[in-house]
Amino acid sequence: MIAELRTVVDLGPFANISPGLTLIVGALLVPFLSGWVRSAWTLVLPVIAFAHLMLLPEGYGGHLYVLGLDLVTLRVDDLSWMFGVIFLIATLLGMIYALHESHWLQPTVGLIYAGSAVAAVFAGDLMTLFVFWEGIALSSVFLIWARGTNAAYHAGIRYLVIQVGSGVLLLVGLLIHHNATGSLAFNALGLDSPGGLLMFVAFGIKCAFPLLHNWLEDAYPEATVVGTVLLSSFTTKVAVYALARGFAGTDILVPIGAMMAAFPIFYAVIENDLRRVLAYSLNNQLGFMVVGIGIGTELALNGAVAHAFADILFKGLLFMSMGAVLFRVGTVKGSELGGLYKSMPWTTAFCLVGAASISAFPLFSGFVTKAMIMSAAMKEGYFWTWMILLFASAGVFHHAGIKIPYFAFFAHDSRTRCKEAPWNMLIAMALAAVGCIAIGSLPIYFYQLLPYASSYEPYTTEHVITQLQLLMFSALAFALLMRTGIYPPELKSINLDSDWFYRRLGMNLVEGVAGLAAAVGASFGSIVNGFTTTLGGVLHRHIGPDGVLGRTWPTGTMAFWTTLMLGAYLLFVYLS
Image (cartoon, rainbow, N blue to C red; front, side, top):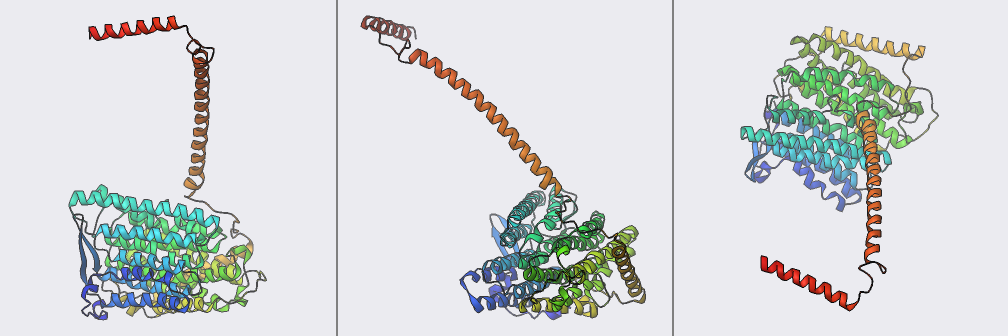
């Protein structure tokens, strides 16, 4: 089907250039433009890159021979094509959402960031992947720092350290792999070698594996309004792509993904910052994708890719709606919001579409993508994994499907009155909402774009009734917990989980080591100072004005000592 959609023409030298480079090079012009010209260019650029992708032939291109390494900078196949399409759609939506920005920084680094992600998924070798892997880290951090707050600065530093650390592991792993195999081809890698294991951990960091995940919840909510939308689309999805390319069918991914899908729910329930709730929800949805990759069948991999595609749209839509609230009200604290449906009705409606999509309501995108993964789990005998995913599905309805719109728009009236979101934000949200509904309502056409031929039918009576029962009982549980006052209150604090090890324990260790070093330094300084004082006294006694070597001696005495030293020297020369 993809081959039928693609119109291949002779692109000449451009047939060897990744669409990601189109974005990166084009982004370099943004700082030199202004006004409507800049805005038009940021919108046209993703369209040009998309047209470029649609014209590219399948296969390998962009061969380079650098420092003895045979690099393949462009590989177009069904898997990379699917991720490239959704990345370019997300780029266009992000640029529309950012049209109100008057400064050039965010559109520029946003396009470079998106271009690095696109180039990474089209990389045909591991070294090219590494280059753009680091490009993703170095460009995206500016979307966090651009917010200009002290919290954003420190979160950006932590984010950069972890992301660059992932790149270092990837580099070491690919070098070990190349030394062992003589190849840098980015295909199935496996865990049976040290190089493969290191690259697996590198991918796991960027995919937010358990205990490696908290950079996501730490950094994303501190980014700018536009930055969080873009961040939610690319970094973790590049890691999902890398796992699907290099580790499909790796059994350990199934329990890892199940844990990812389950544990963020508990933190999301007590979180007060609604963008942080969505960050935990993003981690939850990544778990479904990782399970699909770990199962490794065609149905499961189709489900993982489809869910990644859908997640970029509905999670981006939810982050857009909360970004609009932050832009207009100045906060996304659940305890400080409520009643905003009166001031922001369109934003409310689009948020509800995103909530229905992530909750897998029938006729919305999550219903037709998440079901593929769960069906594959049941079909392959992963019953307990299926049970965990079912629990996670109910949990995501609680914290993302109900909590986000309820506390932002419908809870107690905060009496906050503001303007509706800017027109460009509403357009971006509307387009994302249309995508969510189109995928959920017309899955047969969407399935034809997936890497493997699919005959999966999501709208069976059993599936529809089961899902509606799950959603209704989850809604009932939420209502009962709220009415009885049992629902956990939002904590007006920063909730730490695995980041406790570096934000608390790590900082305490650093402060302790610094204190110990200061104490040792003070003691050493005291010893040195005492020694120099004593030495100075001794020298003063001997060579000072009244010292033996410092006072004036008689001429005869000096002549005697001179003669004695000369005699000793002559004796030494004679004997030697």
